[in-house]
Each structure stands twice: as structure tokens, then as C-alpha cells.
Length: 184
Image (cartoon, rainbow, N blue to C red; front, side):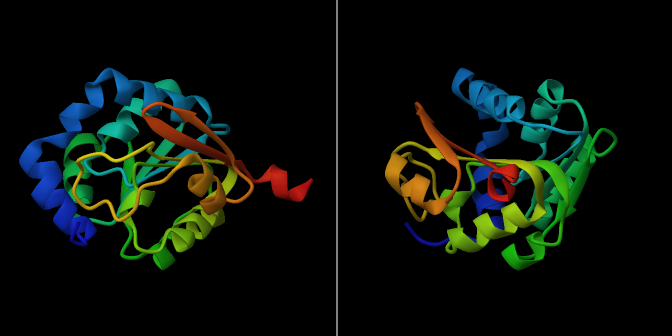
């Protein structure tokens, strides 16, 4: 699969195929609810928020101050136009820039890690902005989504996010990492 930038992915996949409408499918509602239910505190980030629909959905299950973060200017602009009154949306130009976007009590990065060339930098940046709990999800197997640069197994996902509790709930893998697990 050819490498796609975040902007290419948003313009040539999300926008053309109205992918945000898929978030109402049962499997995605369950995924987003499971992510939100793991949150603790009152400030949250949805990293890889695209057009903000996931941010808005998760805010229903985990009330608080939500910020959607994406790497695509088109996505952030669309999210601000659609949900800007309810939530904040921020553009991150790089994974390194993400490390200074927080702090947040809870951080969710759902269905992003399989798209990035450097997943370790993503994970370290996510941990840097997390005060309490980080949830990362990825598909549990091959899906026909453009832009995926890797497929995770339960074992490889566990190795990618050291110190996280990783579970499989088909069709997704969930990693939950807690800051207090390192300080005890």
C-alpha cells in the first residue's frame, strides 16, 4: 500500500467516501464507547479526530473538556466548522509537535497507529501529553482501508505500547496505559 500523508488520507478517503458516516455502525459505536468509558478526569484529547465526529460521540459518554487533534488542516477546519462551539480542535504538524499539545487527563488515539511510519514516536508523544490514562486502538487484522502501513497482532501491539494492558475485542485491539503504572 503506498504511503499517504494525513492530508491525502482525509481528502482522498474520508471526504470522498464520507467515512465519518461509518462511525454510526455498531462496531464503531462500541469501540468509541469503550474508549470513552476508560477515561478518567475532566480534560480529554482525541488524537486523529478527523472531522470531529468521534470526539463528539465520545464526549457524550465521558463528559468533560474535549480537544480533537489531527494532522490534516482540512480535517481540523471541517471539525471546527461542524463542532467548534462544543469542542476545541487543534492542528498538529508532526508527531514531535504532538508531544507539546497537552497535558490532558485522558488521551484516546483510535485507528491511527496503523497509519504512521514511526509508531514509537507516536506512542511516546501520546504518553507525554497523558496525565492519567491513554487508550490506543487498532484493527485486529487486515482491513481494506488505504494508508495502513502495518497490521498488528495482539503480541505485536502489546510490544508496541510497553506497560499497557492490551485486549482484543473483535474486530479491534485496545491498549490502555496508565501513568500511575510507572510511578508506583
